[in-house]
Every structure is written in structure tokens, then in C-alpha cells.
Image (cartoon, rainbow, N blue to C red; front, side):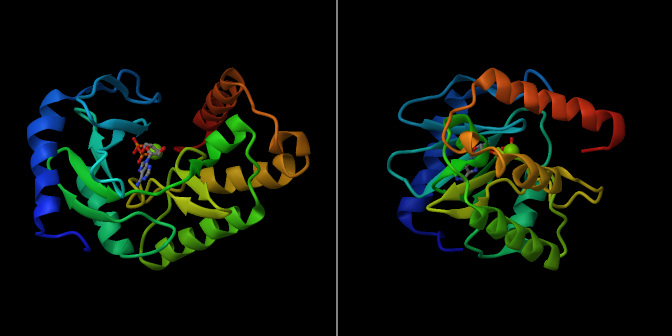
Length: 221
Ligand SMILES: Nc1ncnc2c1ncn2[C@@H]1O[C@H](COP(=O)(O)OP(=O)(O)O)[C@@H](O)[C@H]1O
Ligand SMILES: [Mg+2]
């Protein structure tokens, strides 16, 4: 851990516990849809929302983010354990501290691959290879990559990263990453228009829901 007992860091923990958590209102309204933020105290900023948690930052701590689990959503201890096992790796964040409902993580700069497609930002193959390598690294540490989909992987300056490792202790098989890679090779690379034309949200949502529906018939993930 780079961050420890220094005053700046303990001031952050104080702010999280005395300002952020009491003022924050989030709800996980639907099981397979992102958590919704109803209230976020100033000057905290929303960085992203997943199906379990919201991720926020504070302007005084630009290199960190706080991931707060929605009430009733399990998995925080497991996520901290995954980070402990991963140690330091350029394609992963790190967990510097965690409390009852939140983790303090290293901020990964970049854009999710989901947003790359939404915004028409080209995704080079190197990004896919970096993520493959990072997942092999996790597997070598006894973890099982799980739930690796477009919103959980990011790209910065042509390099790939994995932003969400919360399910890597699960033991059931998950084909999301191999399905995403197949889609990249068989579809994305063959349709150059996709590399620069934004794809509307309703199409992205339809693909996401369609994928879930197909998977529900067959597998657990
Ligand atoms: N370490 C991080 N650095 C920067 N952004 C992050 C980080 N962790 C998460 N995010 C952003 O927040 C979003 C939700 O976080 P995620 O860990 O995927 O939550 P969930 O476990 O609910 O799916 C991600 O899609 C990403 O945009
Ligand atoms: Mg996620």
C-alpha cells in the first residue's frame, strides 16, 4: 500500500465517513441495471455506476476513487480480497483501504470500451491483448476472471485495463470476456464504420439486454 497513515489520507477517510456517506443516497432499483444516485454531497463527483456500486471522486484526491456499494449489495470483502491477491499490476487498480460499505481505489484514467463504442472511439487490438494478459495474470494468482464486459474494461492511450474485479473469487464459468473478444474479432474489426461513428444509447442498451436474454437461457453469467 502506498497510502497509509499520512495525514492527507486519514483526512480523506474522515471526509468519506463524516461527509460523503451520511450525505449520499444511492439505490439499486433493478437487479441488472446500474445503481442510481439520488444525492451526492458537494464537492464529490460521480465517476461511474455499476450494478452493485457507485464510484465517486474528490477534487483534492485526483488519483483516488471511492467505490460505495449500494445498500444490500454483497461482495465488498471479496473485492478487497481480490485486490490483495492481485497486488500491483499496471492493468488493475489497487485497494488502499476499505470500510463497511466502501473501498478506496487507485483511479484508472481512461474510457470504458462500452463508451468507446458509444462515442465512436477506435479500440486497437493491443487493448484486447493487454486485457487478455491481465486476466491470465489474475488466473495465475488463483482468481477466476468473471463479469468482464465492456463497462468493466477500459482503455487509455491504446492500453487496456480491467476496472472491476469484484467477482473474481466466483468459481462458476463466465464467458463474457471470450464473447466480447469474439464480437470484437468477428464484427467490430470487420465494420470500420463502428470505429468512428457513435452508436446510440438505445442500440447499446438493446445489445446489452439481448445478450443477457440469450445468456439467461443457457448459462449463469
Ligand atoms: N478504479 C477506478 N478508476 C476509475 N473509474 C472507475 C474505477 N472503478 C470503477 N470505475 C468506474 O465506475 C464504474 C462502476 O464501477 P464498477 O467497479 O464496475 O462497479 P460494479 O461492481 O457495481 O459493477 C466503472 O464502469 C467505471 O466507469
Ligand atoms: Mg462493474
